[in-house]
Image (cartoon, rainbow, N blue to C red; front, side, top):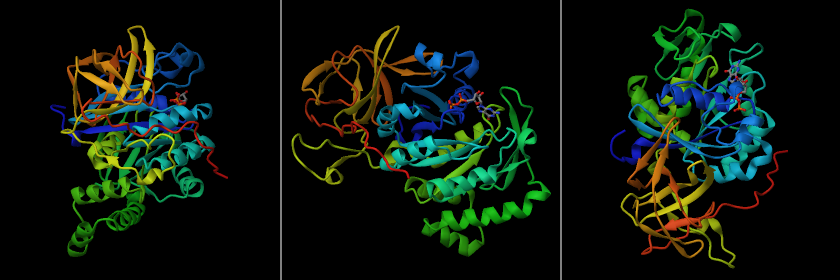
Length: 414
Ligand code: GDP
């Protein structure tokens, strides 16, 4: 991606019940986006997103690092959201700085308890979501049954954008209901390629039915699209995508895709969907300012700071990691530009911080940045006394951004 166009940034999380395939999907994404030249398999314990030794031992991801990759001239920052029940505070922290999320569920078990908990947390922060039903290659996997658990357990309007072709070990590809074509993967090895085909005869009727549902549901939120539909009996792919993005952002429905991350089927269309349907930083409302100390206020009435490239700098520290290079403070920038060497105010603590080196973390390298912009995420080296949840801001406009709620309220999902 060239420049810093907000519309070309996606800050996303990938969230899942433990073992549903979050790590595998993240690894495949890093592989396909070309920044990771070798896939770290989970069982080898060398996956790029697992920072800490502790994680390697446990085989679960408990930190929230952010990894940057590029896809179709867009920059995708993947903020690692932990999936384990014990780490709800971590999930909560990272959800705050996401603009959208990919929600992975398992093709055999469907929605599991941890997915429900994470789903409710994402609801609290109005995080737009798309769903990926993974592991369709597994014995016993059933897209339609897993899909039904979305409605049953989460009470949502899940909207299939794809139907599977073949099942279990014969899972071959998907019918893409947006473009009405089949996507067939070749082989099952790393770097798997795909080609487009006509929709198979035995799925034509079903695809037509699901496509009609897709049009009815998506166009209901898009007046211009509905008009186009009445005039022509169908809509352009661009119109349908626009409607799908709108409904995804406002939470009217949840686009649902499928595949098997492990066998490399479905990950590229998932990346396309991240670009097409999940919001850019300026598609969502921004972040609230923090409530005044010692005062009871209705948090929903606090002013919102929109993501603004031209405003005075403001950013939120959301994760701190100690690695071999020292302390890395991950900051989500909401407003303005920050250059290395600038002095900012930690408005939460009331002291100044000098900005040293800043990096974007890729799977296999760290790229030094001379400046960071609204909408983006970067790791700062050498901040002296900034903790998770602190705001860094321009001294001329010392705003304090919404802190993250601690402890996480118990969410009743019974
Ligand atoms: P996480 O806990 O959600 O991060 O899940 P992982 O990515 O670690 O996956 C858990 C296990 O499921 C690992 O052994 C993976 O190799 C396996 N796995 C992940 N995706 C798939 C898939 O699409 N098909 C099959 N059969 N196994 C998968």
